[in-house]
Length: 200
Ligand code: NI
Image: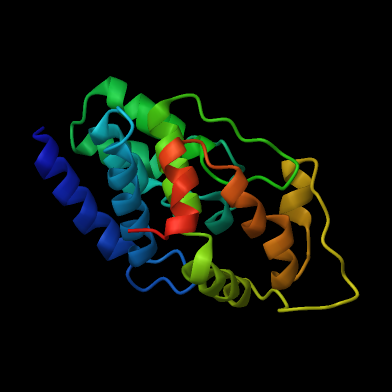
């Protein structure tokens, strides 16, 4: 399978699947993650094909949108890549990145083993901070029925993913528990600079 065609087909597939999404995980979120990842890759030597596929498919199997646990096998992404006849090594790598990518709580470290995974995770995190990140936090809160603010409920630091997942907090706390921490959690030197400069 020609790499360019694989990317074009994946773009069409994801655009179609996510276009009506209203929780801040719509096609244009995926698009920004994809473009951020391609931008970061220019400064960090890595496998661009893996990066593009992983960033385009990163939210397809997210635990937030299914009853699955984090780190589960991203079946839909795997099936899609097999259908495209992408080589086995690339499929394994892309699926590993997807299952490792989501944020699992303020006190829980999520490790990315490859430079490609680090880049995609940074690109996703960059879309969670700044003006876009603020907008997405409220859109997501509304979509899952989370209250906006309750001053009697203080932010907490989660020590396990289960704790993070069960937390019935409000959107303002989400800034203290996740969004404001992300700029210090960037993996790559390029992404560390971008929160100050703004994304491209
Ligand atoms: Ni995402």
